[in-house]
Image (cartoon, one colour):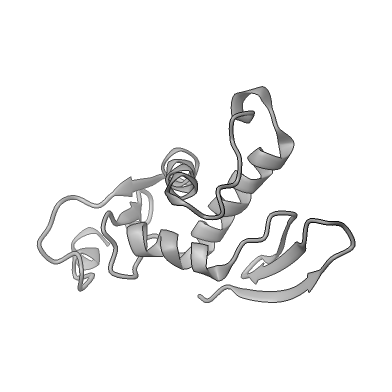
Length: 130
């Protein structure tokens, strides 16, 4: 699945951007570029990942849809400013942002690391766990 930026409107200083996915629109006041989604995917998804994740339930590799959902959860935490997440701030899609999204995927979306294998790059490991 591909994430598309549908529109950008600027009624306030922070741009509000809409992203569409299978379930509808995600609205945030932090501009998220598809570049960040691809960056997370390159570490944990299906885009030749360094540390691939798979769903503990379905044994499927991390999908773009769940990456976008986890990013949305992360941004909600930043904007809400609860005491637990008061130290969170958007780093323009840096490695700390990526790691926090990864933690959300592991803790809340029930993803796990794929066991060590020599065939990670060609995704043949999926058949072993599907």
